[in-house]
Image 1 (cartoon, rainbow, N blue to C red):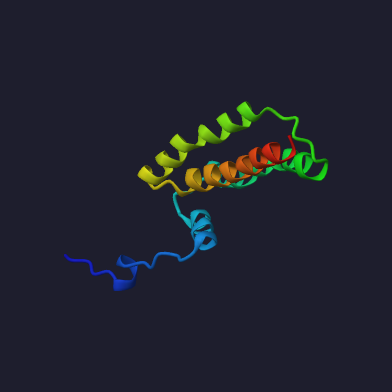
Image 2: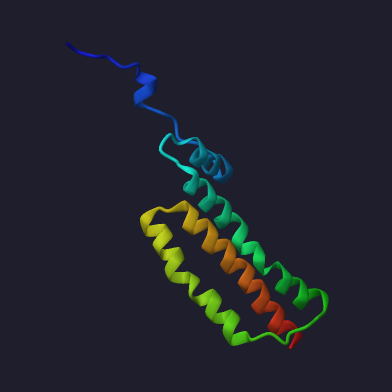
Length: 113
């Protein structure tokens, strides 16, 4: 007895764009609640740097530790590399956004010192 499947079940189209791919994570049948929380935290976590960015640029206050913020940004490089090699878009998105925000803080520290 042979079973034939419709061709559309075999060749599914891949979503295009970052937001479509993130939305596709929520539609995966094997995704559980933990996957949803991880994606939400990966998106939200880098925004915890906003108070420091505002402090530096609105108050013109460069009295933050340049060494600490440089190390924070530097330590993202292995995580970004891991995300690229493992094709883990959640890790890659999180660490890239986090590093961009940390570089904004570093630039502000250097500007207003």
